[in-house]
Image 1 (cartoon, rainbow, N blue to C red):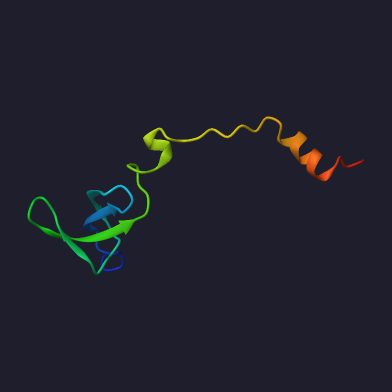
Image 2 (cartoon, rainbow, N blue to C red):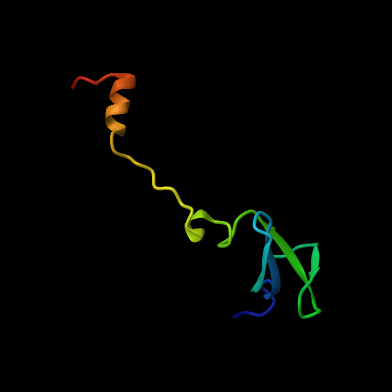
Length: 83
């Protein structure tokens, strides 16, 4: 790697606003806001709207959409197109 061209890679806390879940990881993302972590250190915090704690796919609350009959619904609504 060339020196002085890469952003600093440092510990950052990502906080899921919808689930109240936070995790410490390393990132090049920056933030003006900080948070005191469990180890007593202060880290930049980045608020995210969704993470693995609140995403429906990971929480098991995902809905399966039934696509059967969609063509028939379309044809009923807009009529059948002649070729």
